[in-house]
Amino acid sequence: MGGGEKIDIFKKATIKLSGIFDLNELYVHLHNWLVQDYRYDVQETKYEEKQRTVGKQFLISWKATREIDEYSQFILLIDWDLRNMKDVVVERGGEKAKLQQGKLKMIITAQIETDYDGRWKSAHSSNS
Image (spheres, rainbow, N blue to C red):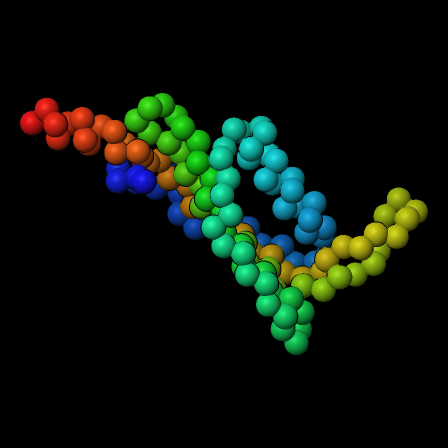
């Protein structure tokens, strides 16, 4: 829907991580943090997985929205770019665990969208 003005709070803030991490835990934790702690509605708008000679590549995009009031909403655009991803086995707490090794770049844009469902524009137009 949409149709209102989008005002950038910040554009393309970048987080980079290179090393060993639990991709599934990161994915689930960030999703739950947005949905449960901050009441965002999260849509996965893109998910691509490609096998490369140096490991897997994942391109993931999320659009998270949260109503501020009936006129405006917050929007978070989160793009995950994971490269050279390989499964590795490490010891965690005395037990073996399968984690991932690779490079993560997360790009985040935050916006406020006014009249996000077009309600005010159409109300104004009908009164003119």
